[in-house]
Image (cartoon, rainbow, N blue to C red; front, side, top):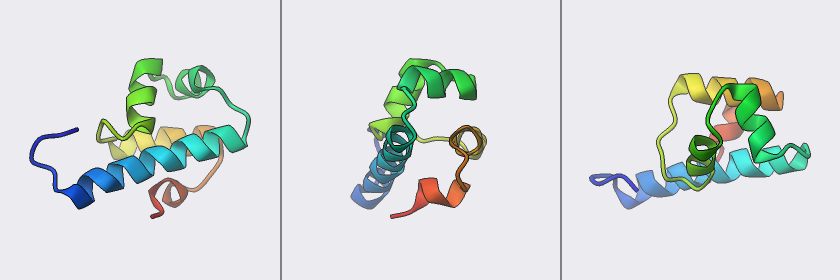
Length: 77
């Protein structure tokens, strides 16, 4: 978790991570495969899915393209 984040901000990062994981699982894609498709380290994707890192717009764009979803689907609360 990032020091200085409010509880709402931290919860939002967790929600983004949960959305990524749910979409990935619904498409039958492993974490390793999604990381490969996005040119990310698997450990970084794992931190993203657990809400322990703040993704950049560029990273969210790569993930949305790899999952063939709209980027807004990753950000839904």
